[in-house]
Length: 341
Image (tube, rainbow, N blue to C red):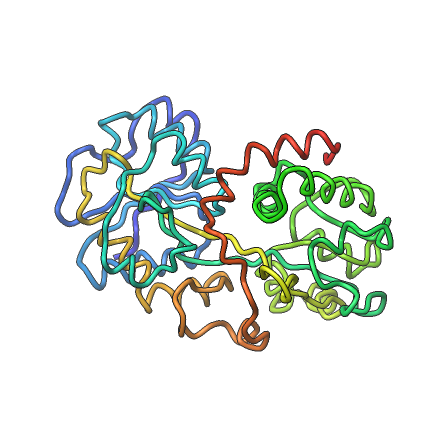
């Protein structure tokens, strides 16, 4: 059975629940901030394996958090899914999740990819990589994120705005590694080296490198893979002009973030919800994450997309991703102070 999908809206938030509030043994209600068609395959595979139907409500993270809060103890939400540790932290900070103890999750999900108290778990990884113009840049000149703040790259960098959660988490990782003062110096260096004011999404930064508007960009790896595999000839040609670097291989490793989920505090179908999280850590689900949106699985030994496989193994920063959320407020303040628009 295909999952029941509903789009969240602010009107719906005010109006009340889209689902019946009674708990049924054969269903689960998922509030999701992921908007990938491949996630339907996840839900269908879970139903095929367990017989539990999946009802899905989609919206952005803040919208879903507000909805769950408005619905209160009567909320039908069993699981909330979102992307980036910063957003998971916001949900956690608003008291959305309850703690889960699961031997399956403890065994399969790396400790660095889950909340220390089991409030949420990461199920897919996204590397924040450096992209470079193959004709203009020698990749050996870029070894780390820290290098990007060097004045030799003045006017060379395309990067998204400071209100982007991916950049907030990247800066949060710099705070974890270097402390607030050095992290602010780095952020100021990036602002000084920008080729233009921040605009657009990650794909736009990569295309800026391909067009020569800038020589370097920062973007999540899967946006680059999408361009490499695009049905559009011009996008594929643009991607071929760009190379990818996984920085900090001689140190802490490349910054990675997560797509993750937790059980909602008043979940009416708690047992099904835990079972769903355990399914997301299964080989079946991990392969869907890896193939559907070109994300890296969190479980070792999972077959990945051929492009990802061709990159080989690289060192990833093993700081617990919950720290990225904890450092998010300070990262936002630093962005404001340095004038990162």
